[in-house]
Image 1 (cartoon, rainbow, N blue to C red):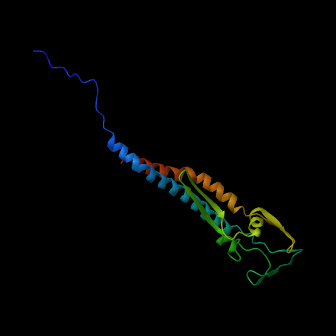
Image 2: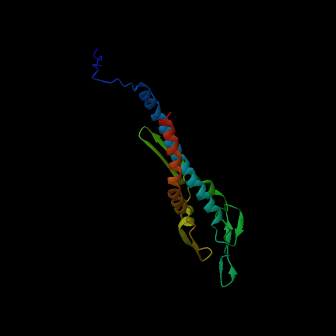
Length: 171
């Protein structure tokens, strides 16, 4: 007796479950990408705060060994020199923050002096000549170095989120 042949010319593939997973995945993936962006910006802001707290000059101002200074209206005291940090009044430190922009096609974050920015922040960042004390004040480069650190940290943070996204797709 001859074997009965299967006359099928096609094979049935059902991807309904996969499509359902993929329908749910974009929102979850988008949320993970937003979290990655936020984490990276917060890392940069935290690093910037650290630099502000640790990059003072610790120098007494004056010429020929004679201290000079001025009355600080912000702190209501006389200043004769720099501190070990750059937060005498705390305004520059408190102004550091993040901003997040979300939309259907974007996820952006910035960090730096995002609130109540004052002109002297830039002077402290880049360095300046202090006419009251008659001295060059070196820059602290908190924003510049925090940006550099965030760029260096980005691959590590991205790997963490890449693993999370892979788990979402492989559910």
